[in-house]
Length: 156
Image (cartoon, rainbow, N blue to C red; front, side, top):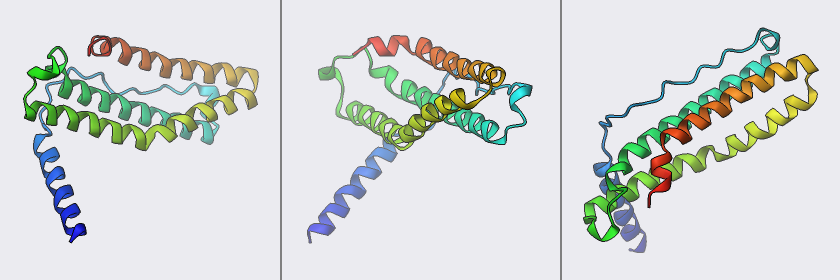
């Protein structure tokens, strides 16, 4: 009996969250990042795979943030008492979806940081300098994202 109630509750919650999720987001998106791998690093398959994987994860984070911003922007300057129940559900749904996606990939971001440190310590000086340029490109993208959504960070 208790399991049926839990299943019914979870099913209802999922239906509400899916129904509230908008599929059309007029977003001025940042284009996907494409890293140009320096010639000196192209021979190292492990580094190339790492760069492509990191590029994919950063693009995925960027896309998730773009969707989060589009879904939450209408509610940013509104006091919570002015939000309708549906608005609060939509806001909670957007934040919940982003949190789930972020938690699923947070371990990957930690691995990226660890692996990049490992590469920097083990590569020759020339290769390490080239690899640092790639990492600066990633950092530049993160700064672009932060700058684009600076207004959202300062609200609420």
